[in-house]
Image (cartoon, rainbow, N blue to C red; front, side):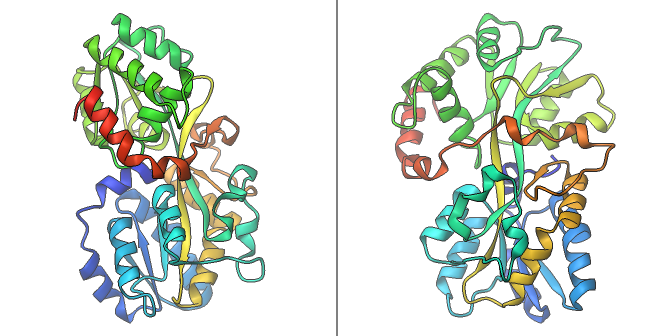
Length: 345
């Protein structure tokens, strides 16, 4: 993937957080972030211009957002991180635990120049930095008439028009919002009534034409190997795969829209004031333009522009569906239990 927040959460669980934190002691600022292309894009587009502009040094710590929050909570007066890049689910958790400092227009003016649908999220305790959307990638050799909308995807899967795969409940970011809430919503349910979603997923599973994934790499291997024809998948990673010599595959966003997963930038409470300057640079139009073009994910600053060569690959913000993350977080345990009973582990 050109790392979306959802994939990077899973991919970086094995990173050495403790070792990175100790190594970062000599730096002026310590940033918790994701690995792979995400980190490469961060270093090139955000850290390099920040260091050049300020003369300060930045160290990147890779790891799990949950680990970061626990470490910060264990040492709130002297937190081990100054800035964290956080998926929406744990961004709200960080706010609820009182671990995050609020941005204001005087110190982080660029935090107030973002796309309208992101502006009210978090009440200023960090803001959305970039986003990925989950549409469909498919094999044009085996799927001649791809579904135009999500209900057609469901019906075609049940009918055996293709072999499909979608995120499992065990996928760290997307299992709850994509695989439960979005289908419940599509079939008349809601946050308080997920049964319609579970029922339709079970029906697809029972057809023998649907599998579940937890590892994004397995999806690409399945597509290349011919085991699957179609996958619910993140836009940036899909386009990265297609552009890397796999032109027989295509990606698109079915109607009536696509679920979005967002990565926030947040300043840790009691951390270095330099973090505010870093956040402002990270959210500036030129830096956001560079980052979004490098990683091929949508970005938050409304004045940022993409490289024309890849601009068509960015999911438009007006077709994004933002799940009620705060409500879903409170129901996570019950939803997982319901999925396991009906769909399986």
